[in-house]
Image 1 (cartoon, rainbow, N blue to C red):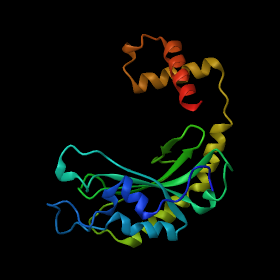
Image 2 (cartoon, rainbow, N blue to C red; image 1 turned 90 degrees about the horizontal axis):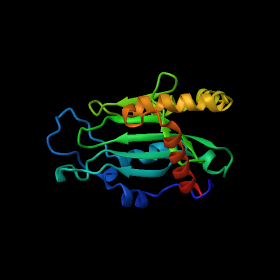
Image 3 (tube, rainbow, N blue to C red; image 1 turned 60 degrees about the vertical axis):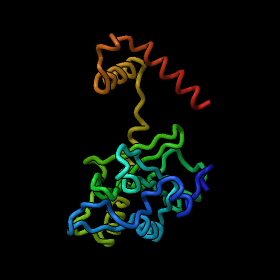
Image 4 (cartoon, rainbow, N blue to C red; image 1 turned 45 degrees about the horizontal axis):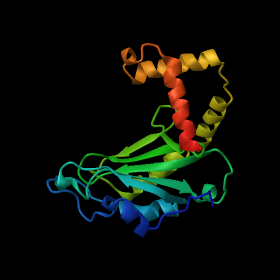
Length: 210
């Protein structure tokens, strides 16, 4: 199997994200709210050939949300689990749900990069993002969502291959990084000191990797 990656049992999942196994929704939901415990859908994913490999849940400020908060589960295909270090990227399914009305039932296709241990969820026009509201929720809709997102895998592989074939000069890398800083942060805080910021990032990255 993939190095240090193995399917998680229900017992392992409940230890890291108990909200997955909530037996009822938070108080105050409408009669039209169709509650389906997330854990009852785990076998739906397993039957489709995708197994949970990671899970987490959000922290809560109000104790009344404890056990009902937003949680995510990452699923990987059995094919990829049985191919250790076969490639740098894995196409995984990421499930997001909650039992306190803070999230719809969301199924995303994700790219998981082993090289930097970062997961990129891509709910865009190029790929697929499926959201199922709890009102009128059925298990059949989950099966359809799994089929829909996995049908995009060949397209994502092609797009990733195209991106990986693009090589940037040092000047282009600097322009790209500056543009990213402009978008993500207050540029006044950086005063154009790109090299110092970028070098600090690289040093941190090296320490985390090595």
